[in-house]
Image 1 (spheres, rainbow, N blue to C red):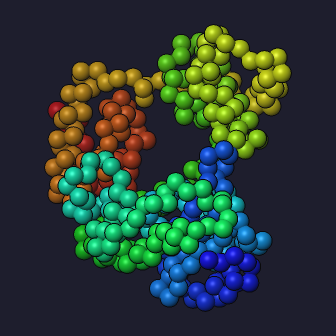
Image 2: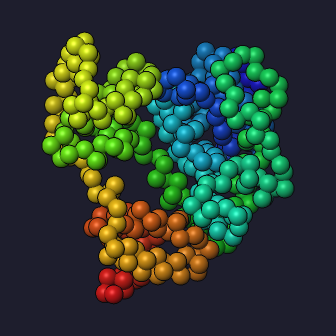
Image 3: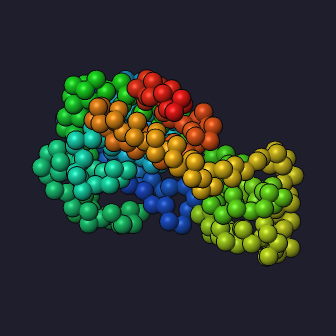
Length: 355
């Protein structure tokens, strides 16, 4: 394990010409708002090691390598790893190959027992492709402890040891099925800053009960959610440590109230964020479908399922049940109205409009 700046520079020098980087991270996110990045594991064709982020004084050389324009990140289920590194670096990778997304585009590789919408773990994918069984003994380890057990370090390294092999096999399959461009398109959707920069005005979307508030209470609900999010950020504490969802709803409904000190903090927060007076809650996403909408969705699902079968995809990857309901209700922001999905489905969608 790399535990000082010199070792890090030596490792980076050894891989300076490598552009395929298998990457994983270990972090802790139990009592903080932001993830505490603990380890970064990197594998290339020639080297594999893990970097003790908590021990390294200067991480800039690592970031210089990771965010090179010609470097491809090979990651399984990349979003949290991208986020954990973005919190420290403020940057996003230039190229990404997410092996979980690749697997989503190759239905026949999924075990039959797996739910069509279920995500496949790196361990399961490695067993499918390499016939190697990886243990999950340290999935709940507190990665801030030092020294780390040797077995835990080996566990962390296993998370990148087979990524490059998995990548090349998946890439070959995607090329054979003319889907590599789809994979790259899906990966680009994870490389937008708005996914990793916090908009407190949208914090209400994380509180399911907010949409069930009476319309006249929507504004106070939005404001309470934004205040809780902003306070959690300032204190670097989990949002529910600041205020639970149920307490937030009760305060919005007038069944409970803040202490005088917190009420003053809340009012001061609102003076600093006047934009929170104009945000509207979309209650439609939590409204159950009507019988007519259910019937329309079934028609669409049957039509889309035929296309999914034709392209070795699951229905959920093409168009989820929730996305179909939003589309029926008039939304134009669903994922199958753009990109590769739309190219496949546009004729079917037009036919269904006339049914």
